[in-house]
Length: 223
Image (cartoon, rainbow, N blue to C red; front, side):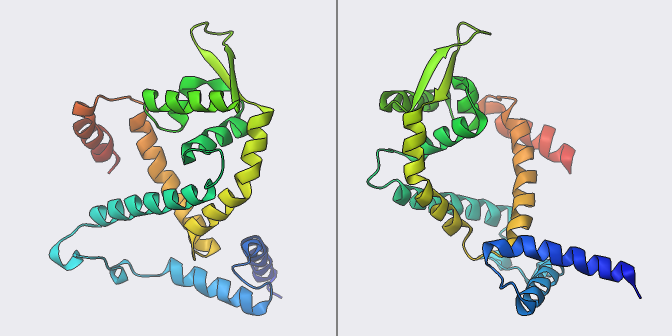
């Protein structure tokens, strides 16, 4: 008896059970076979089958990726606006700031602003709005008296919990009809892309130097 094969099949079934939690596949033999078929199809799908507008006229994959990312950002914002409709929240950044404070704990204002990749003036407006709502409070930093430590309040947690159901639905709508395997592949790709850009963002490069430095010192050196 081929015990190694049995072991591999069991491991495959365990992976299937994890993927099936989102109910993309039925938890039976039919769903299991469809999950294997989708995984194999995605793993061996030839890249030359992928098409996009103006590809035949020389439009690059980079251009298409940029366009799709912009589109996805706009779709996500549309669903976020719907999620906070008729709520005390003004923008999606309001609840994103609260989610970060709830998940990662108290931090300085600048730490929170940088975590959300925003300019200081915009970030301070959001923080002041949240303070005005009573959703966060601030205290002096022990390490640096010039800094303020901000924390989510009980009122902020309650406000967040009231809309979290809609926020989760909005998040599920954004990922649309992707299978669990596709979601995992997309996470892996986006995390790699995020790490690349985070390294550039952390340098706080002036706008007039950003493109040449990012291109020469980061892109070319990583290719």
